[in-house]
Length: 149
Image (cartoon, rainbow, N blue to C red; front, side):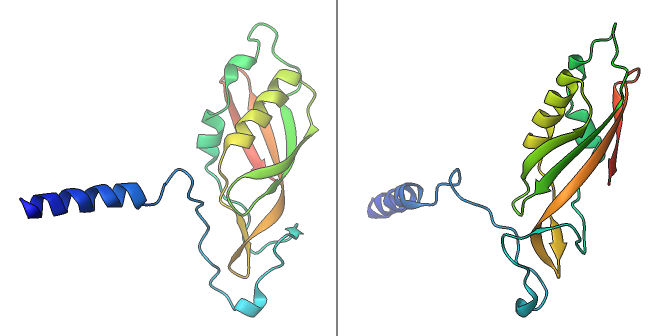
C-alpha cells in the first residue's frame, strides 16, 4: 500500500512541478564555428554563408487560391516580397515590393507571416537576414513558382 501511495505522489508531483511545454521557448542549436566569430546579435545580414531554407511546395500549398476571382483573373501574375528572416524561424518587416492586387497581396502576407523559414547562417550561427522572394502565379492551374532573389 505504501508503494502504491509513493508511486501516486511521485507521478502527481512530476506533472504538477514539471515544465509547461506551451510556454517553453525553443532556441536554435548553437553555431558550430569559433565562438570569437559569432555574428552580431541584432544585425540584419544581406550577405550570408547559407540562405534561408523552405519547402516551396508546402509554401505554395498554404496559399488560399480562393481569393482569386476565377471569372476576372488579375492581369499581373508576378509579386515580389521582401522581409527579414529572424533567428527563430519567423519573419518581420514584411513588405510587398511589386504587385498591386489587394486580395493576392493580403493573402501573401497572411501566408508568409504564418510560415516557418529555416534561418540563414553566418560562420555556422543563425542570423537575421534580409530576404526577397518572387512569386509567379499560374492562375489557370492554381499554382505558383517561388524564386529566391
